Image (tube, rainbow, N blue to C red; front, top):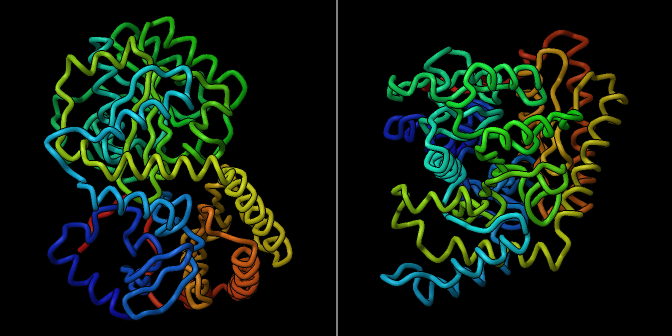
Length: 435
C-alpha cells in the first residue's frame, strides 16, 4: 500500500477529514490504494513517497496547474519575488499591475479586489453584493465553496445542495439565523429561477452563477438571469474559479455571451500558487470600501506575481487552444474506445475540464478504472483536466492504457464480478465523515 497510505492513516488521526481539500481525499479516488502524497511534481509527472513516477491525467492539482507542475517561467518570477521579499509593511506594486491586466482582459470591469483562494474569493464577492444592494438573500446555481453564505442553503432543506455538484454537504457550524438567506436553482432551469425571483423579489441582494461546468447553457437562460438582475438593480456574480482561463484568455463568460457585474477567478490563474481575484463594475465593487474585507496574506507578493507570469505565458503560447485541443482528443478517445469495447459511458463538460460517467455501476467501475490506470502508471479517474504540459505522446500512451483498462472492465461487466476485482473499498462521492 506504500508510504503514502501509511502516512494518510496517521494523518486522519491528527487532521480532521485527513486533508484540507475534499477533492484530494484518497477515498474519492481509490480507497486504501491511492498514493495520497507526493514527493515531487514537474510538468505532468508526479513522484510519490515511494519514488514511483506517474503521469497525471486526472485533475492537475485540482485544476490549479493549467501550465503544468513547477512551470519554469512562473517559478522564475516567483523566485525573484521571494528574493526581493514576499511580505512587507508596504504594498506590492504587482497588485496594481495585475488589476490593470485583469481590466484590460475584461473591459466591462472597472475595479479589482484580491483573496488567495476560490472559496474565500466567492465569499468576498457575496459580501460585496450584499453591501452594495443592502439586501440579504442570494440566489445561486452550482458549487461555490465552503463558506457560510453557501452552506446556509442546507439549513432550510438538508438536500438543497445535493444537486449542486457535491451531495452530503451539512451546514453543521453555520449559524441557524442564516436560514433563508441563500436559495439554489439548477443551471438552465429558467422556471425555477423565476419562481425564486417571484417569491423573494426585492429581498434579493445578488445572483451567483457558474459560467459553465458539465453542460452547455440553453438558449435564453443567461438572458433571463441578466434581465432580472438588471431589473432588480442587483449584481450578477459569475463564478469563474473552475472555468476561467481555459476556453480563452480570461473568463468563459466572454465566450458564452454572459454579461456579469462581478466575476471571480482562482485556481488556474496562477498555476498552483494561491491567488483569488474579484473583478467588477465600480457601482458594486466600490461597496467594498464600506465593508471590512481585509486580510494580511491577501497582500503577499507571490500570488500576484505568479498570476501575471501565468497570464503572460498563456498569452504568448496560446495556451487555451492547447487545452481545448487536448481535451477534445481525450473526449473523442473515451467515446471511440467505449464503443470499441462495448461500454456505455456519458461524456460531458468543456474540453479542458473533461468528464465521463459509466452508465452501469458507476462508482464500482470508476474505482476499477482508477485502480487499473494506476497500475499502468497514470493518476487517472473519470475526469481529465488538460494542461500545457500534456503533449501528444502523453495522450497517446494514456488512451492506449484506457483501451487496455476498458477491456478489463468489459470482461468484468460480462462476468458480473467488477467489485470482486477491487483491491480495496469502492470510492466515495460527495461529503462523508471519515473515521
